[in-house]
Image (cartoon, rainbow, N blue to C red):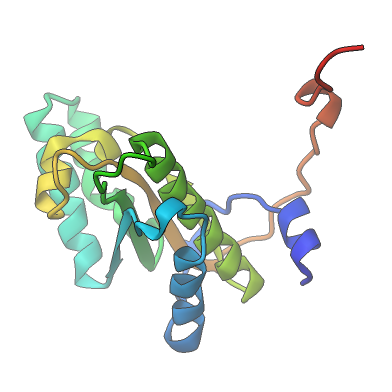
Length: 185
């Protein structure tokens, strides 16, 4: 798949199964993250690769978060199952660095770009993924359990694996609805 086709046909795949990327494929995914825009070469990100029993442990952490945050019984029961929807999750978080020319928002943008780059590297190699966030990405219990500083942000949980089904084609939005020339004529 050429780069332009990859970008123009990008979409999330919520149904994932084994195998997850391993070996050279996983290393390519990691390297793609490290090539994203990074003003002043701060490397303002951190990544946790979670597989196997780690997915169960992440589920327990989500369950504890749901309990401690007074979620409904349904949400508490569902929480441990969320991570096992894919054979691998890469947690992407910022790792802010104090810098006079690079504000936090730029560093957050770099981490977001790293997430997109990893997903595209996975797709280019025949895998698929979906970038998820939700309440657990913003929860101090989850951050602490993963060893992520309260000052940093979980940008997302990148679920990776092999597509379990083919998805129908997705409609492409009309670009004129989102782009305009400036200054206006």
